[in-house]
Image (tube, rainbow, N blue to C red):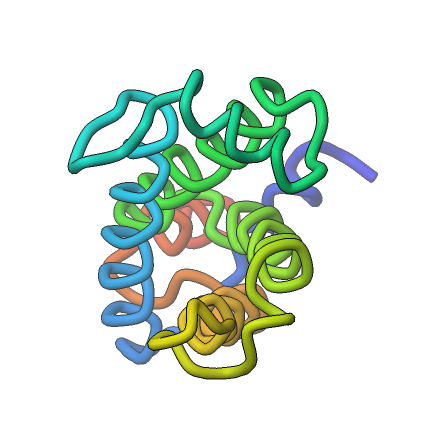
Length: 150
C-alpha cells in the first residue's frame, strides 16, 4: 500500500456539513481540557497536579498518563477544529474517553451531578461519529482527499 493510498483512506470523508458542528464543538472542548492538563490553563492543574491525581486513582506513572491524556485532548481537539487527520484523531480521542469512563466515572453512575459518565459518553459518541464519517466539508481532510483524487 502506497502513502497516497493510506492518505486517501484516512482523509476520505462524507461531503456534508453534518460533521462541522461536531468537529468544532468537540474540538473546542477537547482542546480546552487538554490545555488544563498540559498548561494549567482555564483553572486546570497542569501536568504535575493532573499527574498526581492520576497516580492517586491508579493510573501510573501519573505524569506520563497526564502527558498522554492532555496531549491526546489538546492536539486531537486542535486537529478536529481544523479538520486535519480527523479519523486518526477521533480514534485516539475515543480511546481516551473510554479510559476516562472506566477509570473515573463509571462507579458514579450516568449523571454529571454525581461526576458520572454522561459527558464523556457524549464525547465518545461524537468521536465515533467522526471516525465513521470523517471530517466533512470545510475541512483540510476534504481538501487533501480532493487533491489526491484529481
